View 1 (cartoon, helix red, strand yellow):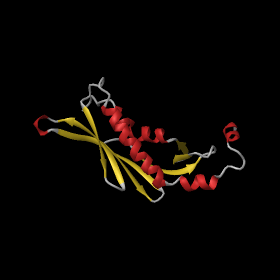
View 2 (cartoon, rainbow, N blue to C red):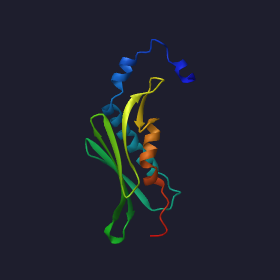
View 3 (spheres, rainbow, N blue to C red):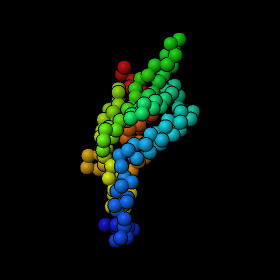
View 4 (cartoon, helix red, strand yellow):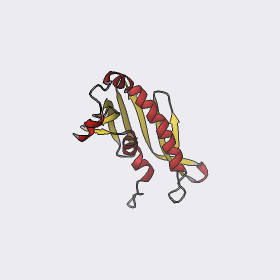
Length: 143
């Protein structure tokens, strides 16, 4: 348990736990996901024709993937929705295999992390779990 050696025995876990709330982490996710969308839209060397949009709906937010669809403008082909209910943050995809629920907890170093199933993840890892398929999946040639 090398990682615990960085945390002093008198670590103020009470204050750290008080700051480690689902509401706080959900707002951080909202901000960082919005930034991820801007970064992904800024990648010009991909020739997939995809455009990503961030939609903020208060107690939930979503990221959609749209493609040009002739004279009709754009058509949404997939999306990922983030919603918070109490202590839980639910992440669900439409037309994607993304569906998980995260809760927040302190790790052994005193940092606020996301727990999905039995695994503990940092914030960027949860964003990758949620958005990687949406941003980077290979088009299905069989369709």
